Each structure stands twice: as C-alpha cells, then as structure tokens.
Amino acid sequence: MINLSTKRKEIDTILVLDFGSQYTQLIARRVRESNVYSEILPWDIDEDKIKSMSPKGIILSGGPDSVTNTYTPRVPKIVFELNIPILGICYGMQTLAEQMGGQVISADQKEFGYVELKINNESVLFSDLQKSLNVWMSHGDQVQDLPDDFELVASTETAPIAAMQHNSKPIYALQFHPEVTHTEDGKVVLDNFIFKVCNASKDWKMDDLISNRIDEIKKQVKDNKVLLGLSGGVDSSVTAALLHQAIGNKLVCVFVDNGLLRKGEAEEVMETFKENMNLNVIKSDSEEVFLRHLKGIHDPEQKRKIIGRTFIDVFDTEATKLKDIHFLAQGTIYPDVIESSGSESKEARVIKSHHNVGGLPDEMKMELVEPLRDLFKDEVRKMGVELGLAPEMLNRHPFPGPGLGVRILGEITKEKTSILKEADHIFIQELIKADLYNKVSQAFAVYLPIKSVGVVGDERRYAEVIGLRAVETVDFMTARWAHLPYEFLEHVSNRIVNEIEEVSRVVYDISSKPPATIEWE
Image (cartoon, rainbow, N blue to C red; front, top):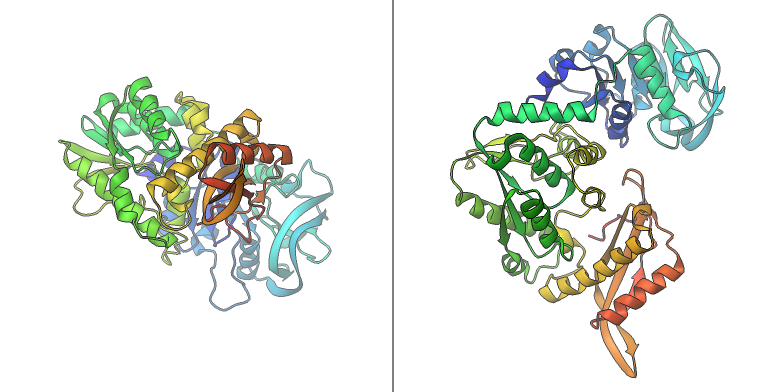
C-alpha cells in the first residue's frame, strides 16, 4: 500500500484532529478547496504520528461530548509543544479553553442554528469582514471564563465568549462552525487561518496530483499485473482510468453483473471501458447466482450481507482463473477510511463498515493498490474529468453498493427487478429531458411491497405501486425532498403506469432527512 504519511511530507498540510463531529470531513474538504492538503486523524492518535506529519497548522474539530464531564477527549500534549498555529472549533474551543486554564459550563440557553455574531476586537481571522456575521451554532456548553493570556474576539446574545485568541501565540478558537455553508463568510475565516496565520502554500492541485499518483503506482507495481473489481461507479471508474494510464494492459478488470444495476448500465460499463478505453475487462454474468441466494429473503440487512458475500465469492472465482496477479486495486476513498476507523484511533469508533477498508483476507496473496485512499468524492470527480471520463458517468447520482437490492422492499425477484429498472429509467430519463437531473442531488424509484387497484381502459387492475424519491442536499448528512413541479410528476406517473402494465399507482416521497433516510432500506 502507498505510504501516504511519507508522501505528504513534501507539501504543506493542515491537520484536523477529530473529536467526533459530524462536520469533521467538511473541515478537511474546505481546506482542500483552497488548494491546501488536509488530513484527518482521531484526537487519540499516537503523538509521534502528529509530530511526523510536520503540519503547518492544526484544527480541532467539534464533537458530541461535554468538556464538563470527567472523562472526555482532550487535545494531545504534543499539539501545544509543536508551537504551530491552532484553531479550535466548537468542542475544540471548549477543550482548548479548559486545558489552558479557562472555565466551561453547560449553558442555560443552548444554541442550535443561525445566530448573529458580533466581532468585539480585531483578529486576523476576521480581517476584511463586517463587524457582525450570521453564523451556525450547534452547542450546549460554552466558555464562561477566558484562559490566561487570551482575549475576547467575538460574542453572541447567549454566548459572551464566541471567539477568542491568545495574546502572543497563534492560537484561536471559535464557538461556531465556519466550515458549514450556513455560516456567512465561513470560508474567508478558514482561509484567513490557513494563509494569514499558517502561511500554507497552495500546492494541492489536481494536475500535479495525477502525475504524482501515476509515478507512485508505477513504483509500487513495477512490471506486475493488477486486478480491479470494476462496478461502473465513480470511484472504481476513476481508479480504472488512473491505473490504465499508469500501467496500461497490465491492469485486468473484472466486472460482476449482479442483475441489480440500473437499466442498460452493464452494457454502458462494457462499452465505456472495453470498447472505448480499450481496457482488459472480464464480464461475469451472475444475475442467476445472486437471485438464487436472495430467494425468500426479506430483511434489508440480510439482503445487504448476502449481496456483499455473493459479490466476493463471484469475484474470487473469476480471480482464481487468472495467473500472475500480484496486486489488487480498490476504489477506496477517504470517507470510507474515516468511517471505518481506518485512521488508527485507539478507541476505534466505527460509524459503518466498508468491505474495501482494512486489508485483505489472509488467503488472498496480493498487495493492495488504493490510489484514491486520501481523496474526497468531489476530488475523485475532478480527477475523473482530468483523466477524460465522460461527465455523464462522473456526475451520476449516487447508487448504493447493493444496487436495486435495497430499492426493492421485500423479496427480490427477476420480475420485480425488471419492473423497477423500467420505472427508474423513465424517471431519470424525464429528469434529464426536463433539465432537472443536475438540480437534484439524488433521484430514484422504489418498488413497494404493496398492491393497489387501478383502472386501465374499462378494466380494473390490481397491480404494483412504485415510489419516486428525489432529494436536494449539500453533504448527504441532511436532505430536503425535492420540490419537483406537479406537472412533471404527473407526466412521469402517467408514463410509468401506461408503459409498465404491472404498475397501477405511483407515489412521491416527501420525507426529509432527518427523520427519514434518503434510501428506503
């Protein structure tokens, strides 16, 4: 595996220490959007790891814990010993204040959402900004007494100390979240820290990154062959294109068609990679195998596990037919690593498991190649553009790993899959035609486990119900149901019911996240 920590020494890095905030990844993304490399590590990482990175600055994220409790996360001692700029955000501010001699209390009035921030004193963080800003708060604790040698910078109506700074050291802290889009001029505040305090260089650029990755792959792989499981998704597609540029026909791709892909997707994958890009792609037609294993299964989590297990079995079967394969490539991206606690936390806080994080089974005698392991999804898409992949492929809406398996509620059968593929295709086709596809973040059809009476011509029809789902979101952590025009929804509904005789009714999902999730299963 490519050693990222060694590789990163050559460029300026802003380190984000994670205290468990839902916005931690957003902080790192905002830094990278300013063309500066950022990496996330858990707060309890080995201190030698922090030291070895030689970061230009450290940002302490928010988190769900309360500093007022006895055993909660604290800033590692090495952070203060490095004498580099520090920015604490939300919980990061509170633990910073507590550890440096201030006092934190549980607030009588908790702040969630927009508040007006009044800037009381000059600070480089707020240079070139107005004296009041609308910012996004999310906290129950607040700093009551400033630590020694700190001064007040800004306040809100209910938080007298909403921003503070050290009198002589480059240490700053904010009670609000500058990384979220809700905060007015939040990016300017972060940029002021990155460039005016940390003096970081803008050396995280996509064209340089691609050439560096190609060199790294060549050095790691040498003259050996690499095997890649190609799904047709953004991550595996960009991985394939990058590896192809680096090692050409030494890349062997296996595409498992499980029958749970969107209509025409299997053909598109083969056309794009085998015919247009001339990649060495082996297609495994495995629909019958997957359907056989899924027969009689209704539980969503069980379906997910069966689909994942069956994929690995089919892939392994194809891999054993090949000779002299020494490396396995995976389209692992940075959020996968973080969410699976692949970032070496002592507490190993796992949000969710990913099949492509955490190494290989002992029986697979291959080394891993993961050229996207430190990239966010938007960076992967940018790399895909530079590598010449079609925008239609890169900008497609997210598609779950188990595919239509989690969009068919109840048992999965070939008949249900065929019906859903047609309905989903009509919905997406019409969104594109109406210039609405890129205005929503994700859209799809769902096969519901109910039947409904309908009338077609002079006959009553007792048939299936299809649900339509479309959402608008920035980060997929929260999402609003898309307010699509009534006339559009009517047109889509008419097409689905008229063209698919097994369907009698179409409904539109108007649930937001939270409380609902984006997918139905």
